[in-house]
Length: 277
Ligand SMILES: Nc1nc2[nH]c(SCCc3ccc(S(N)(=O)=O)cc3)nc2c(=O)[nH]1
Image (cartoon, rainbow, N blue to C red; front, side, top):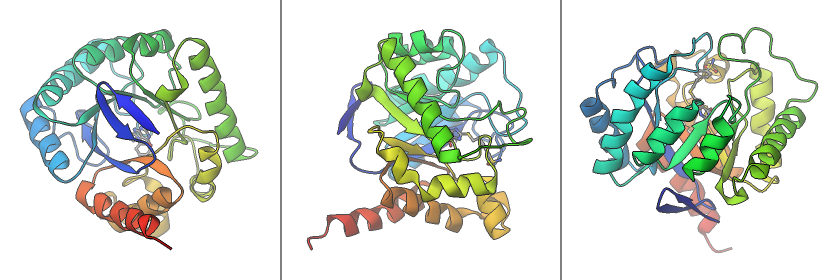
């Protein structure tokens, strides 16, 4: 299934790697080393050289406890970086935002994907996404970053995550977003305990049957630390295990910090899947 990302066509039947480019000062794992556009461009260039098909530019931290940022701060952080990368590199620029004005502005500057951890929940976000003409990743989050990890609870996490995402699909399609511009994401670490995250990973293929490309982001997250006891910058092996599982279960986009390592893990899965019987 070929999807058009602002003019760049990618086969969602394959698994692609998205490199994370945080332009927030308090990013949970890379401490805001990429705030300046020229430094961000260098990092993006390196990730593309390592095989990233996407780079994800986020100006508002959504890690647990993070407070929202003002519109102007988010625009100032994201727009110069999106414009520079879209102009200089052959890559799909994804924008990690829930803010309608940021969606519209970055689409004009060359963004190719809207990645909204709030599934277009903010006022005006659905209309902005439709107007942008870009594909949208709809992600599940229970609560908000400020409180989502306080007491996550579900009767059946996959059933509730699937129901939420299908409801959002219904809303955005009714508003004019075509089905072929929608990706879905269970939202690892967004209002989930370790058990919830593992249950979602175990039955990720059930999300696949909804018929939309799957987006998975678990890189360096606390679920990996809880399983291995490793600190945030020592979670690559565990992250590659999740990437491999997700690729095997049919994920189309993996959002990671460690690009070439993940590209190689995906290559092993693709090689196995591609071999004649
Ligand atoms: N589509 C999509 N976009 C994303 N953007 C982010 S930012 C990560 C925020 C964060 C950091 C750390 C933890 S924790 N407590 O589990 O370690 C949770 C959330 N993530 C994702 C994701 O997955 N999908």
